[in-house]
Length: 404
Image (cartoon, rainbow, N blue to C red; front, top):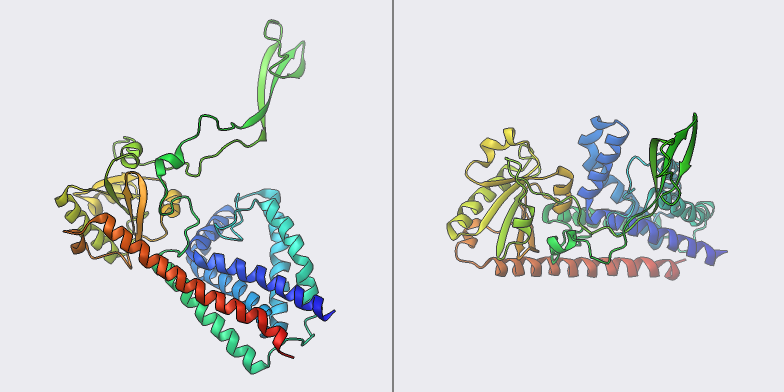
């Protein structure tokens, strides 16, 4: 029984820690997902607390998981896990039935599940969670109160620091389709041998006051007495869907510039400011200075925004401005504003306005060299984070077996 208790705690702890961790990699993305839910349920007045609620959700999941893994405050952690599942299991059933948002976002962008998959996943997770809750008073491998509090505070502090870094300097791991190294034009194209969507198409005709359904094989094409009434299509199987869809860049006059930007040879710098009135002022100033420097060098620079052209006019004067869907821009880069360098149509580098190089460095510096330096710095941060998290996980997994 004690072995089963430990296994249940480890399984539950790993699931909760993983779920909180992948959300914590991209807390802004979780906030956007909450905003989608608020919009679907007509709770738009909660938009202002989407980010704080996202941070709270990430911390609760991750810390609950780590408390169960390490044996720190197991009883409160068991209650937290049980309450969490008691709230979200029926909620995911409602989402599966009504489908207001296609992706629940329970594992961020790392693992995309449909609402029904999420519901059945929760039913499976309920098994170890219930076992953990029933055996919450078993003190096998449980720390003392003082040690448990110290470990929990350490987890909270480190995870808050981790999320703060991801908010300021973009997610350390980019699970979205616009990650560095992605060729946008290729990711938007559909291969010639791609499998298309398959539909069951039915035609409804009427004759002598009687309606009847026909297929493409037997509809009365030559019988003029039948009168066409309606047509219905049911999706049987989903075909190939390109990784990137809906990425469109338009000028103020309505000219589509997508191909020209994504298939251009050489470097193109995009300053993505999804809502100019909400963008960071210092970040915009950096971008304007950068645009001036790049224009002097003959390098293309575009401001990309979802702000209506009538409102954007004074804020983009003197720069090439392209307009795109706001949801698409949120997916391209989380920072507002954010900077994306394309080299021959491939994403070479992405910067938040927090860690964007000073525009003066672009005067004589090579853009690809700066992109390489940026990728190296991001890689170093990822290695450091993985090392710290690996140590935490190793300690957490071994502590319960070394303690009474």
